[in-house]
Length: 109
Image 1: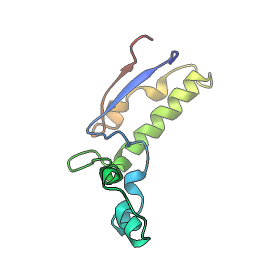
Image 2: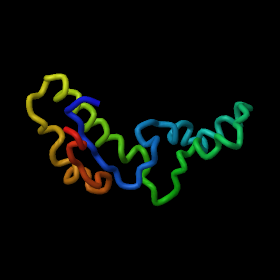
Image 3: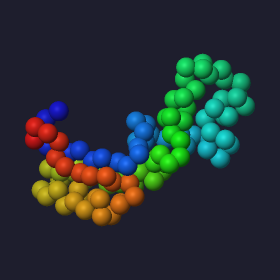
Image 4: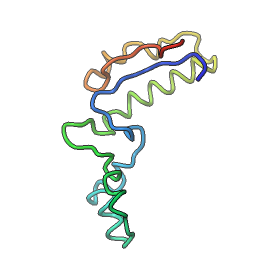
């Protein structure tokens, strides 16, 4: 990737924390329960992916979404020249202390 790049570390986040896969049908028991009700077969090899392998105390995706939205929006606004400063990317650890483990410009920038 070309600069500017940024790395934001999220505490206990799974690789699908950016998506809502874990939240699909959460009020009905989760994605696998919805698939069972609809008689959609799910291969055993895909079952672990339906929960992103998330188990307490891992970070629940909805807790990460506010900081993800903030960081992505601020980074894109800066990269595309809408915002000259990176002010929208500062203080993330303070604003989201339970979620953000650290931030820094990515290596090579």
